Image (cartoon, one colour):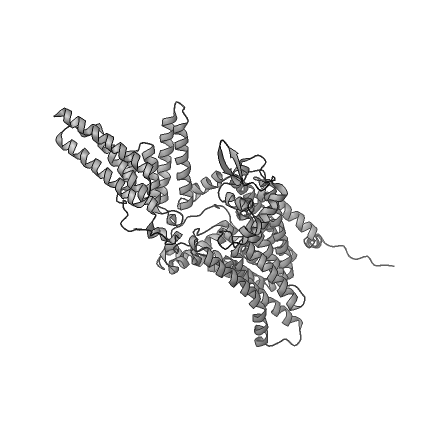
Length: 637
């Protein structure tokens, strides 16, 4: 008589399902579907996508690996994007331009607006890579002996998280998703139970692919160190005669030297090639940048655990000293949250919670403001590090429930949190259907974001010009309304602490004044340039001197200054032409002085830039007004 095995309980059956790769894969596909549900059929975004599409239409290896190309450190991502184009895009037949209305247009712009654009296929591959990354994360957590429930919950929440929308929905960030796939695979390979040389070799190959997808993948390196410690702890527990501590560290250093060397090479190349993008530290120094990162890290934690105020762009006021209460408020929050997660976790999960906290901060390292990057905070920066925080949070929450002896609440609470995350992602996904949507979402949510306010300024400026040329009965009124909105967002952008990361304030003032002059707003244009022509705290950039983002606070471009002088000349010319000045001798003298100043401004512009046609036209206008004034003065005599 054979004995039947005991039937599994409900909890046991669920645990068995959570260990089945096919079930987990299907669940993660549903999670990724929530993240991309609103924009699968959306076209490419004009913000940055065109740059990446351009690379996908050029010659293969010379472009992808050329030292002079700005995409040098993204060869894996660019090859992947090219593969998407080959699979889903139209045949280019080695032609980079199409002719429309007698003008040449880049094919990337053409297909971005074409109904046959290949954005759908690219987003599908993004979503599948995101699912693969979640699956690798799940396997890694199981290998680290996390419970099946914790491993599945972390992978599912990470895959369905609304912060992932920026990386998965925005095609420009295919590089982020690919870096996660290869980075998580490298961590899993490092934990492979085989000969050391095999796991180290495989992990190094995957790490090269991760860093070749996106350089910030070097943030995985410290996690290798943590995993090495956990593996040694596991090995010591299994062996009756463990090796000495000195022997362990010697072997670990030898193994870790290989991924460390890979990361060092990518860091050096990145620093050499991308210096042009470096800006000043947040607040002006390394010290203030580190203080500001306290608030930024706290906001990342809050966004991961309670994603209620996400944005494509973030704005914040830099922290300048320890006397700022935000240091203690946000610093206290970080310490309390992390310490509580580690303390509340029990048994082996306490070690996992500590690993999760370390993972979170380590993976965020390359995106911290120590590296002087233009964007101080972005959802995509936390893409690699969010799994660590979710692991710590999950282990800590589980430990709290066990301490309270409320095991029956564990599954409902975990499900409730996942539903909250999924619903948030469901609505967040719709923000990434086009550039205007996610920019204006950021404009309202983040009034201190310089990039967001600049975009709103440019958008309404363009709309003003379109309205003026529309020829409709209310064209002039709509043009003035749009220009008023442009001026409003221009004023808001001047209050953004990170404005000069993207645009020189002088350059912005000149651009606004030029728009205002075109729409006949003389007084506002004059206000924009008041005290800035020339800017006393800036000097002209010398010919041959390398341009960097940081130099915007020190130099101004000769062309920008030349345009400012032309605008000043036009202001003087229009003031001289005003009929309200009167017909007295003093009035005519004032007009002559204004015309002289207008001519001087043109001479100064000519010394900075060769604008012969433009400047000759302005001189002709000045001469015409001067002749009319002299004629009027003679008539009065």
